[in-house]
Image (cartoon, rainbow, N blue to C red; front, side, top):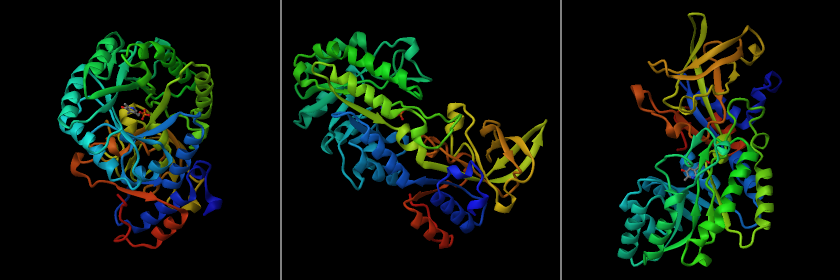
Length: 430
Ligand SMILES: *Cc1c(COP(=O)(O)O)cnc(C)c1O
């Protein structure tokens, strides 16, 4: 089959192509399924970890993808997990490699806070003054001394902004810098809480390494001032700088993370900056998207081709109810065409297509303007970069379609096994 691979098909690892083909053969209906490349996920996590400056930590923000196999794969290669709900606590605690974990997020339930404390949460990221009071009451009822970080919503220069802002503007997240002194005092006065640091998760979709570097520099510049607000500044040692590293979905010259955001460059600049500081904080990243996006592939089968008012449509199995990411971000997701008959690859007319799903709404668009050659009913389209905020943010029950299967491909060997199984055995690993 290799000699028929088109350039873009070459971007998909062979074991993923094999798993897709195997599932395809096992399916009685046209397919729509997710495939996750676990060895690639582990390798990417290890590479990100290896690039960190000394003393800087990497946590995985599991809301990007909290499937058990994803957490089990990343947990051994990162320093810990960042969680934001009771459900995520349950998933993290079921992980085969226990790791330290922190609890963030607005709207924490008392029961979540209680649960977190009894299950050994490392620290809370406190989002408001009200939360300080509730957390103190729960810690006191358990006779427990709880480390906390205060989440700050700092003022940000406009040029450091990205598409999705969590700070520097009115948001439900964190405590305004103007209120920080009051919040620090409230924690200092809370007998069962101890302030160990500050947390800032200001944005998402940051694709510019230079800008992110400047953003981190702006936190480090303010760090001594924030720290000086505390009654015991010597206990305030941690600066969690959040996640927010973006993925360029629009022009992926490569599906390799190394061809995208310059993570090593960011880490190196951060290391140099920390080396110049008197009493630098222990810096921690909590990354979601940039860790898990690259390992996922959403493979869908073309059900129909048609032209409407001059525009070509490929109607596919599945849709935005299974992969809401492009609709949520308003982008045209990249599409890789796998002809049903590899002999036909490179044949037929090249034309732009709008790729849609099965939903009875004009919003069910996965991609517009995709130049594809000789597409026919029964061919597969593969949407890469589908490992973060893909299936898990989707409204999968809309229109009562069945949920897509998810395959967690562990090795080239395993995908060969999958090939030989029948439908009964080719069950999703979730
Ligand atoms: C979502 C989130 C993250 C991860 O963000 P990414 O953009 O996926 O890296 C980190 N920290 C907090 C508090 C979050 O809400």
